[in-house]
Image 1 (cartoon, rainbow, N blue to C red):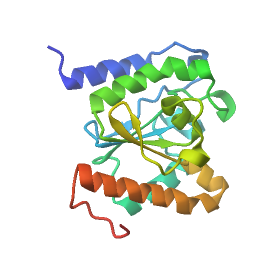
Image 2: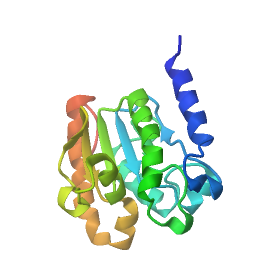
Image 3: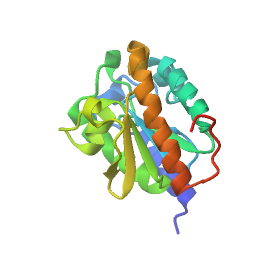
Length: 198
């Protein structure tokens, strides 16, 4: 009988060996994601950047450092509370946005990952992640900060940390979105979750 660990290892191997689209030709790593494999919160970004592709770890570049500051303020730990991944697992050349066919090739991996990790809350980071899960008519500027459902799971769209680096004026709205996540996490998982800001 398959165990949870063996199913996660099969998924990991499937992602790392994937050749379903042309991105495999230029990648250094196909990124599975990292964090707690029983996390109640899953963060979903767009695609690996240059540093992530080189090192094989999600969100470690400048955008990742920005994300870590937000998570620290929330008192969320990558090891305990979260699993972080991307819609597309290989870096698009020149950090261009992923193409529809690349997203379509990768989405089944994300769906399997969500099923295995079984988070209560999904946080989509940026327009690509939101559109990929909520549909092509979604707009990050209109829909961020509003709870939605992905199947039976709650989903909070917010800005990608890279957008905050380009436009620091978005930080306030993004922080409001994460405060909503803290409140919902307390309601669904841990009423005593400590955070000095909420």
